[in-house]
Length: 164
Figure 1 (cartoon, rainbow, N blue to C red):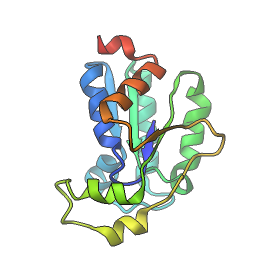
Figure 2 (tube, helix red, strand yellow):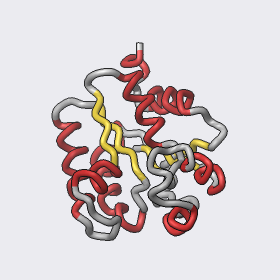
Figure 3 (cartoon, helix red, strand yellow):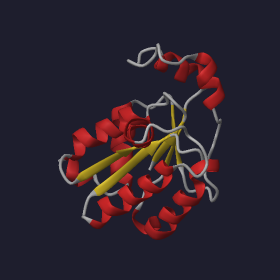
Figure 4 (cartoon, rainbow, N blue to C red):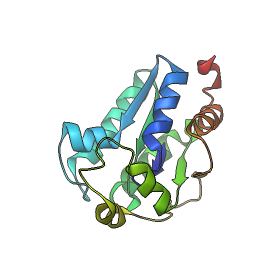
């Protein structure tokens, strides 16, 4: 599980894990499900929440190591994430990307969709330290390169062997 604000590096880290992990690894992106597949707004009770839950569970049940990445606001997704945590706590790894707003704004400017939305939207979506209750999410700071973060996550999740 990789969570963080918009443009904090979640997708980049997930892509690095995908590259290092090879086959047998499912990457489930909240943005892809919510914005591309369902084309819905991020709100409590939205359909993407249940679909994300189903996709994660299905991928795991089929033997895939599974990376879920997204903003996944605790207020909207907290119940679903708590259920996943309860079921898979003994074999899961949870991460929060703690990246300052100004850094995410600079990162956003380099994205292909930078012209679609800007500072005002990013400020509206910003939730500083939106950590899930329980204190189990590990923190990755802006000073950590994506490849280093991917390696740390893979090692913690027991996926280091898949990268070899």
